[in-house]
Amino acid sequence: MKKVVVIGAGHGGVQVAASLRDEGFEGEIVLISEEKELPYQKPPLSKGFLQGKQTEVSILFRSEQYYVSNAIDLRLGVTIASINPKENYISTVNGEKIDFTYLILATGAANRKLRFDGKEPKNVYYLRTLSDAKWIGQQLESANNVVIVGGGFIGLELAALAVEKGKKVTVIEAQSRLMERVLPEVISKVFYETHIQKGAKVYLGACVNGIQDNGDVVLSTGEALPSDLILAGIGVIPETQLAKEAGIICENGIVVNELQQTSIPNIYAIGDVANHYNPFAKKNLRLESVQNAVDQAKTAAAHILGKAVPYNAVPWFWTFQYHLKLQMAGISLGYDDYVVRGDTASGKFSIYYYKEGKLIGVDSLNKPADHLNARKLLELGIHPAKEEIRDLSLSLKELVSVS
Image 1 (cartoon, rainbow, N blue to C red):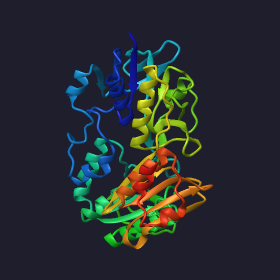
Image 2 (cartoon, rainbow, N blue to C red; image 1 turned 90 degrees about the horizontal axis):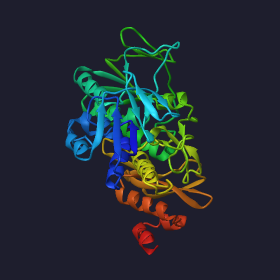
Image 3 (cartoon, rainbow, N blue to C red; image 1 turned 90 degrees about the vertical axis):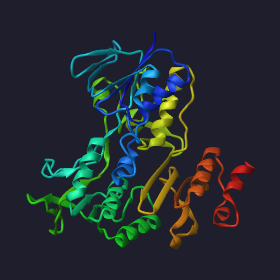
Image 4 (cartoon, rainbow, N blue to C red; image 1 turned 120 degrees about the horizontal axis):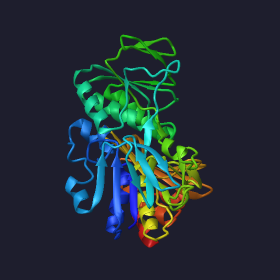
């Protein structure tokens, strides 16, 4: 009997197990998680969960009974020590061997850590797991001065949450504007101005030089910022150690083909850890998103079941901060022109990115209908003329339906 073992029970890991069962796989499925909690969704941790709007139960993917009913052997609190690709088994840190026919690596990514003189400060905290979220939630109850290092999605979501809890919040970002790596200036500006208006203090182009014993955060300018709680969101590093030690080719993650296979054909990688050729970006990259993990899981499951369905899903992402709902579709990296649809002053608009005359991505701020239509346009390969995008009398839904 065939046996699929999945290391990692995040969005990708749970989806691949579910897809296998949904599509008729009759072999064994083992789903392994280092965490002790039932598998849960991570995006709500920096949003609804820490806001108190969602509970531990509400963020679960599935109930415990689901795994039992679908014969998915869920193993919690288990850490894998090594992979033996020649003999097709993995070993746990406790010495248990688990054999496999197919292995899925859904190991995700770990937080990049702040370091000073090669050492990690003990009083800087990160959000990655449910345990992290619980701890941060407790600390926010008593903290007054909260310093956030990093002006990306996670850092700013935490900043917004802390501001709404009445805390004095300072955001420190090394780049010249917020979310600079993924957003154009016009959208960055909206988020910057909103955080300022809500009461946060934002330092741009600023670096942290160290943290004093009393918790003060020292900037490169010499300024010391008082803090009761320091949170950092400065990116992630793909969890590739197991793969590297097993001889699997890794480069900015685990390298996979269009079917999610690694350099060892019966071992797959999905989600944040997988470096794949993306047809929208037209280059190899890793995508850190729920959509990517879920769709790659479906591709891997299909291939195990004998169906070669290359991964080519439209990438999409989102972030919610205060009243701002930003939704992104496609990959806008490398664009050579863009068109704004709507009024930027209203806080409700979309930006359509073009490269060599073709639509490659759309960012929609408080315009969910634009986002859904953009995903459809990209999926169908429709490239509206720029004047059509500018024309607010023209319904984008019509462009999709006409096709």
